[in-house]
Every structure is written in structure tokens, then in C-alpha cells.
Image (cartoon, rainbow, N blue to C red; front, side, top):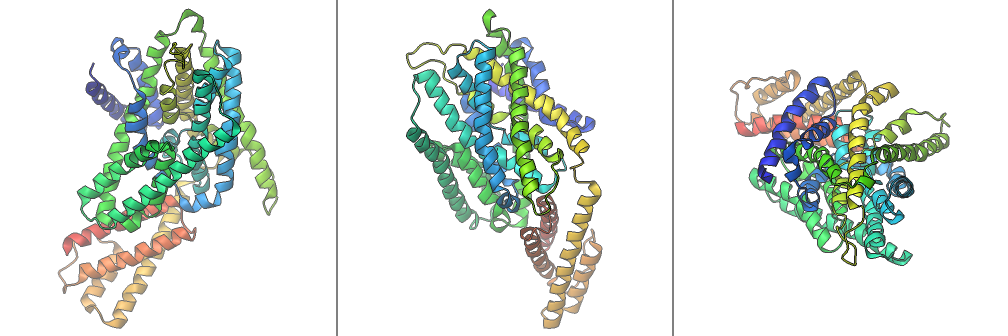
Length: 513
């Protein structure tokens, strides 16, 4: 089966799976992994080979970019300390635990055990974002989980390179070399990401063609990734930094029509890529198992133990930190289990660990085949599958049990409150226009009516200038919406929902002019 046919088949399969996932209220990524496992058992699946370039260069950049754009900058500024502790300390603890467990449970030497630990030490932003879209988590908690998964890749990547050097090249860099590598990867990636964001902002401010805007948006994550890798920086970090910066300035760079189009275009691209990559994760495992030798066959117990150990390390790391933070708060709150339990269980592995596993060299520095590489791939893919399936299917029930999920009534109340405030601001602006007598009374009368009743029908024929005034009112509302978000009065989800509403209204009156 040709690669194009495989991709088309996986997209078609994902469409069916996503439809059933919505009907039975389960996360589509987890169901896609299960579907991929089923396809992997078919005879033709042995012909399907996934190269590191397909995952790391073709699939990963746009998925990381989309996840970074969804990040709430206001919440991230408040959470940088816990995010740093999770992105560095927890990654190191997870990698060490998996390394020693692997050497104890399997024929893999300790050096290859640390390679596996580095691969599985970081949570995956693509999987976390895909699973988190269905959860009504509080904004701060959602940001913490997403930010951890976005910013822990630089740590895991440097660990991976060190571990591979020890296992393949037979040498380990000193502490000075490790520090230099980390600065080059993380710092270089961050600098490249900031430069790309600045360049893209400069271009997009001067572009109003919807087609060109769509092309720029699709090319941006690939540009950041390739440039960072070319200067030996972290492509993942570059994409994340670019997406966060452009996400903050998104409403300043485009008009309402382009924002609506980009939402539709990127939504389609993300669905196709997520469909393919989560299906491939499940599809790879059966073919990798067939390559194991008899001595490597007892792998199932090791996969289960490693998957459980990763969760337990998160629990052991997060519960004390959460208790300390609650104790140090002004009200000296008693420690609770809900927040650390949800964060611990939300740490799914996915696309990024898969890309790292696929890039493990085939041979040692001496040119000999890397021993037990097939077992290493089975363990890595097996843990990823267990993580996506078990944690994916049970995360939503845990969130409901914890009581942390935002009730629909609360979300609706926040939305309606924000809409009322925008209507009040628009009314104040119309009153200013009325005092200045810059528009006819008939125009202002119909603007007031449209604000009050949100009429779906076309407005009556009145004196010219109605659409222009209506768009000015929408601009005032959009500015007020940004102020409310910056002031912390509304969540990121409410801001995005209302911004789409204002954009649709603006498009309507733009077409009337």
C-alpha cells in the first residue's frame, strides 16, 4: 500500500472514529490509537514504515503551533514558577526512574534504559491539548497542564541527546558540555522563535489577502522549526515561542474575516494531522512486536510497570508541591487531592515521545547494529499507547469526580456577563456619536436596535453610514473585550468565543459597505 493511500485511509478512518467518539463521549485521540492498533494487526500493515522526518518535520510543527496559540498568556505569567519546576525537575526525576526500572526489568543495558527514560520523561503538548479540549477545567489548571507539556521538551531533548551519546557513541559530555548544549538548544530555539514571530508579525500587519494570510499561517511553524534546527537549536522550543508570541498578538495582526478563515483552515489541518499521527501510534506497535526476538518477548509487564511508574513519579512530585503551595497561601488552606490528582493523570505521552523514539540511531559509533533497538521501540510505543488509552479514557471521569470541572451554568453566566458589558460599552460609544452629531439619528437608532435585539435579518434601508457606524461600535467592543481579558475578568475560552461572535458581526457589516 502506497504512503498516499495510507494517509487517505487513516484520514477516512479518523473521520468515522471522531464521529463515534462524539456520540459516546470519549476522547478521539484515545479511540484513534485503539483503531490504529486494530489496523496494525492487518497483513498489509507490515509494509507501513514511519520515518522520523514524517513525524518530527511534517506533523509535529503545526500541532505544536496550534497548542501554543491556545495558551493563555495571562495565566502563564502567574504560573511560571510551578511550570519551571515541572518542566525541569519532574522531567529529570521521570527519566532517572524509567532508566533504572528498564535496566532491572529488561535485557536493555542501563545506558539504553536512560535513552528510554529521556524519550518518555516529558508529557506531550499535542496529546494534552487534544485531550484537554473536551474538559471544562478552570483556566489556571488548563494553562498549567498545557504549559508544562509545551516547555518541558527542551529538558527532555537534552537528556535524550546525552543518553544517546552514552549508548551509541560510548561517551558522556561533562557538566560544562551539558550546560552549553542546553543553552544552545533552549536558548537558540527561543531566540529563533522570537525572531520568526517578529518577522511574521511585520509581514502580517501589511497583508490583508486571506489566501496569503492562510499560507503564512501554515508556513510559520515549519519556518521556525527548520531555522532552529539549522542553527542546532531546539525546533520544538522555537515553534512554541513563535506560537505563544503570535497568539498574544493574534487579534492585532488580522481583521475579523481573516481570523474566521484561519480558524477554519487550521481546524481542518489540525484534524487531519492529529488523525494521522494518533492512528500511526497505534498502528506501529504490532509491527514492532513482530520484530522482537524470543529473548525480548516478555515486554508487556515492563510496559505496564513503566507506565505506572511514570504516573507515580508525577504523584510523588506534585502532591508535596501542591500541599506546600496551599500551606504558603495567605489563607493557609488544608491540602486537597483534586488538583494534583488531575494534573498527575493529565500527563499523557504522545507525538513528541514518538518522534524521539523514531530518531534513535540504528547503529552504534562502531557501525554495529544498536542492541535491543526493537525492544526499545516496543517499550516506548507501548507506554505511549497505554498512556493515551488508559489516561485518555479515564481523565474526564476523574475531572468530574474531583469537582474541578467548570459547570455549564458558570461558563454561560460568564459569557452573558461579558456580552452585557460589551453592549454597555457599545451603548456608551453610540451616545458619544449622538452628542457629537457625526451620524444621522436614523443610523444611530438602528444601531441601538441591532445592539439590543441582535437582529439576524438585514436592517431596514436607512441613510448611508449604518454599516460604518456599526463596525466602529464593534471595534470599541473588541477593544473592551481585550481589556477585560488582560484585567483577568474573563477566561481565555470566553474571550475567544466572544471574539468569534464579534468577528462574524464585523464580516456581515463589512460585506454591506
